[in-house]
Length: 149
Image (cartoon, rainbow, N blue to C red):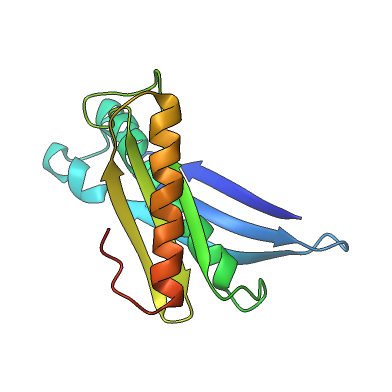
């Protein structure tokens, strides 16, 4: 079984992909942590409202990267990892994370990259555009072409 774990503390946001064997042992396939210490430094400690906002703003990016990296680790035996996460709508957006904001994670043995796109339209249109971009990223990665989209 493979599980995506998401963790937030007062000054960190993290996502990890963990594999659980039939014997119950766990193995971390990827682990992405974003520190928010610098956002709180000016206040001399953690400010809950800033922490909550920072978690929401960072989560999709961290998840995309963790999912892509988790696919290509040695134990997962994948050649290329591709992930897509974001807000397709019709609701759920905010000023900093509007409907149509989508993150793509792509990874191989050489490294990983996370790409942000903003699409416009209704939910079906945003999802269709995201699929096209994801498949194009995969095509480019397989052909060792630049990942510009």
